Length: 176
Image (cartoon, rainbow, N blue to C red; front, side, top):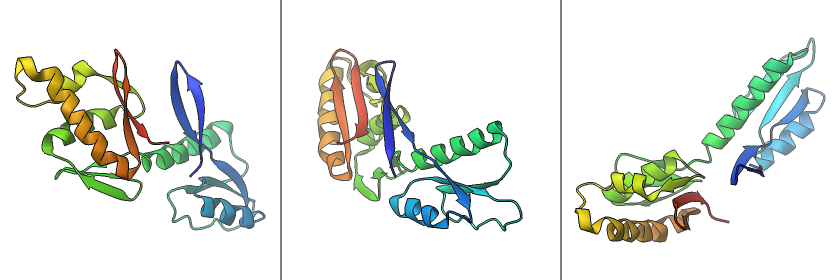
């Protein structure tokens, strides 16, 4: 899957490229993009049978098409492609990302839920402290730092990283 990035309000926003391919005239392009994992919107020519789209990164629409319908279908494909790029935490404390997984403690899972909910954005320390269960008032800062350090060690192997944004909080993102 190819992600392009643009700067927006001091944070990086990722968008997934969606390619328009005429069907059936450009079937070779469909196969090429499929191999690369790029989402494709097939524009079915008049009088042709629509293809079967079993891949979540593929959809079709019949020509002629309104701009509103075209934009809606492309936005849906982007959302589906991006959804597959978000980490998931299951009820037993396993975080999964990009076909890989690792186990975390229940407290670390609680913190990761907060970070995943705002994936790619800074999560303030105060909000993360609220995720710590039964925390003694005087140990809040050290406990959070210790849990973040442990999470960092575990999630690096699955392609994720937690960055410190000094004076603001933490940011969960894809490791580069």
